[in-house]
Image 1: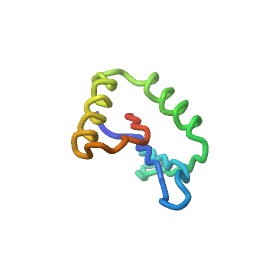
Image 2 (image 1 turned 120 degrees about the vertical axis):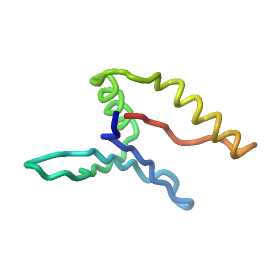
Image 3 (image 1 turned 135 degrees about the vertical axis):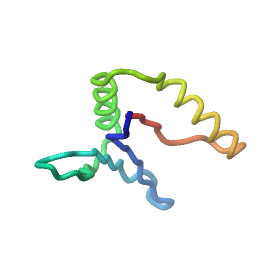
Image 4 (image 1 turned 180 degrees about the horizontal axis):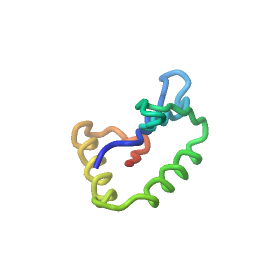
Length: 89
């Protein structure tokens, strides 16, 4: 299993959430590269991630990985609110 999609939220201390960068591993005409797309609307990204997850075979329980990641972030940063969206593809 490899990583073909990466979603990275971009935030600023002064302006807050700026948007989400989506990188997709792409192969076109024997050229391999990361195709980038910028999203301002997080609901678009959630819908895209859900469609990607539904389209592929499941080898792992993604909910367990998300729960483990949230617990780890809470452990590393006690008392801080865990923010952001974790999307796996």
